[in-house]
Length: 356
Image 1 (spheres, rainbow, N blue to C red):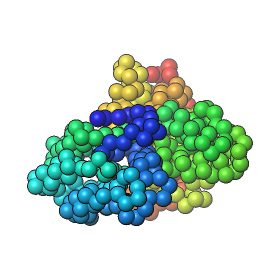
Image 2: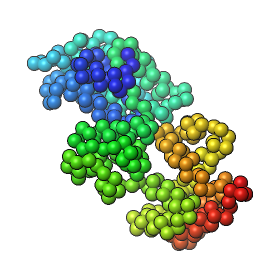
Image 3: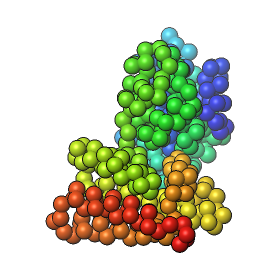
Image 4: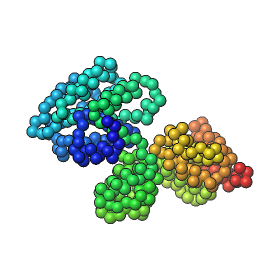
């Protein structure tokens, strides 16, 4: 049985447990969180050692089989958790052994396969043994228990998750302010949870305001460089240089700054080409593997109105030239980046939409 997140939460709340589970997906944070919640729902706050068995990716199937045969003592269930089962090492006889373990589980045993580090996205389109093995495990558990996948969240779903997490901590957070946190940090839920913990500790039961977010939230490098690029195309050089100065103060390497500026302009170009060709942003995001970062293209399509297509093309050429100089000369990196910012600003001003 394949369950979505809501169905899985409902099943746990009703304590309607299956004998075997597979929990996986690109949202690693949620895989970890809901594995813990499932164990807690089955075994309570502090599972007794003799009824709870934890295995890692170096564990032998024979040991897992023995643990599954243990009868619960002074408890309703015996719980076996296997984290990141080593798929690469499984041979045909191992798959048969797994099938036997799963099919012969006692009603009192709950077996959980959790994959908090497996990147399923990387297996898409691949026809290798690893993908086939994993699909076989999922298919086997689907027939005999429950499969739960946590796919990548888009920015809106991530914002809603932040609102929920803050509310759980007793701190109201509007969806708009949650979106601002996502803009600053990105969509990695582990990093976002750290920021929510910090904000809730500061808010102390009060609403999380935009001022708190601006003062406390750590802005990631990609977002900082996005702001620099945005200031450039809006001809706000003072703010562009200010952000650039902060990055150097934080000892960010010039080549890293230029690489991120290049990414920002490529986002602008892809969004522009999509708009001019009538191709939906979602299609472009899938084509270039943006995943849960598809909001970057949406933002680029919005901000792109300040710069023409020829200007974007010429800017990308200038960025490439600067990147080559950084890699092939001993010139001062900070000066090269400052010159690049000035050149990009001139390009944005000089090549107007009249020439587009």
